[in-house]
Length: 474
Image (cartoon, rainbow, N blue to C red):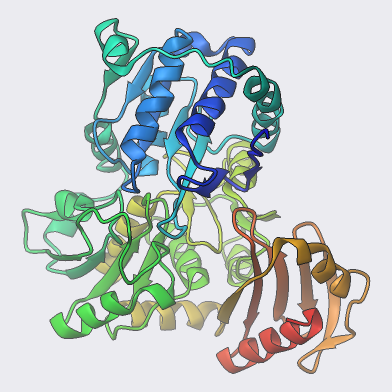
């Protein structure tokens, strides 16, 4: 039986030793190699990185061996490396792109195959579709060109390259690192056993600022957590803040392209609050102007900030591969997702949890406000906005049945507010007359149904989610 490899919102992901096997990873690498050859990009070489998941370094070596077998020079990371550093490495080395072995925020039994473009952004849908379309023939013929790692190294087709120094030098030009080192902030960091381990300490160490890091070792099981920096996975970080009197808590996901934030009271911020604070920082503290690019799952606070600072706001489908092209085309100042992934002008058109965390620290330092005070400052401009999201697992065979329960059956109101607009570009997004919204959509990487809501109070947001569940019959 020919294995089915399906690319989703950001690459291909699978269960380790089930469908995510060395054979399937090599098939994907061969398809990428043939795509590069046919597009005339193979001579630029490729970057290969990986995270801290089980056997990620061996899967990455397998990719490098296939590239070498296809005469594609490969820069291979010598250790687990955050995705934003790999993405920046692509641009710094002027490579044709990258393959990163990571399943990002998924549970520990998963791994993944992310593809990056020459500009460091996630490969566009059409590129992934072409790579995926080549797989059946490659698998059927079992035609893998492969050069052993040691032979590839000896021939110069593979070489190890630590891309962190160039990346760290670059971000030092984007944010005042020396001021942050002198700020005296006490920062709790949860690296979630991922590739971002030790980075904030490395960047901010050597001054009066104190870094307290938890979950900084490699543990592919991710004990007690899923490496996704959202509230329900941040209990240990919240406790660390309260126990140590920390000024703020920062959490990075498995490959450090997303950021989670906990305030000085041990209360997590929502991704929508984080996005709005980052936009406010760029506008108010740095005095910059430029468009905002947001996905359909993000906050109306950005629309209000757009009006206040007279900048356009663009909305797109979920996935940074949809955000990045608009960022580049419109020279956008910031782009982001509800999944806590944010990209910035002057950097790479891709998510970067490390730089996002540094920008938030700079916001605190420049305005001399705690995270909770920053939220009050934000709400003073745009009004209170509260958000929640519920993730529901479902049998994959039930997908069409669930869609049938909502498609074409738009309710006239949700939780007492009239439905004034329906957007089906990515799921079912219902805009309500009071400014709140409800969204139902399927994850592009997992068999999960997500229900999102934003309203003027958390109670109302939760009530809307409850109505969404009833609507779907789940």
